[in-house]
Length: 237
Image 1 (tube, rainbow, N blue to C red):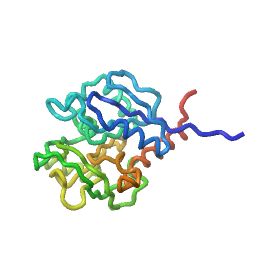
Image 2 (image 1 turned 180 degrees about the vertical axis):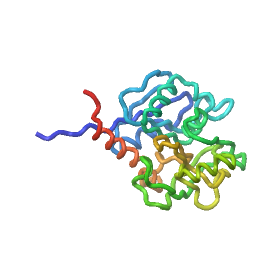
Image 3 (image 1 turned 90 degrees about the vertical axis):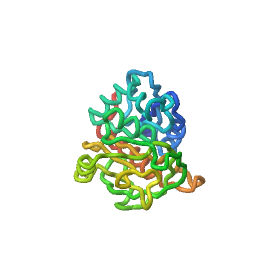
Image 4 (image 1 turned 45 degrees about the vertical axis):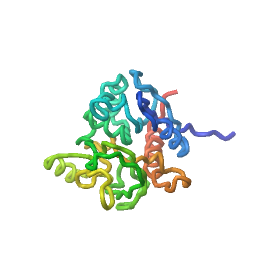
């Protein structure tokens, strides 16, 4: 009798104003994961091995993008999950939330153009030894769309030097940055390497019909990492 291994469970958090949560869930499902919906008001995470904070406009992005979502009840559990080594990925607005919550360094500012940008961009992979980029090759170029008005990553000279020295810069824009990010930064990880944020939307680049499947390299890396965790530490029945 054949048995089917359970799919890796990945939480996808929805805040009021999220609009890419279903896209993220669909992309994860296509890559072999079981997306588990989590509402912003939930105080505890379900039994999962990774958490995705999707794109959108959490709480309308009033005050500042991601500034209100950091206070959502679910974020206390996300912080604890990350502190225990759990994998957390923030996409666009999710990246903004993670920076506001102190889970990632730096800040996201309004685009230099002060205009919303929505187009495909080229990225350069700086690191492949993370749970989010393992399917990539070093310095590989990826084509993934962006869509944001506050995607300019900022870090002062001292912090930027620290990020460069510690290898926390994972993705850079190839060529001209769409938003004016310092040092062309498109994605970073925390010092421990288990939390990542990026402004481009990999969930919109997993189907050839969209023009690129490069996003599957990033999300697929996350799914692979979850499989490895579950293989080493099976979830309790």
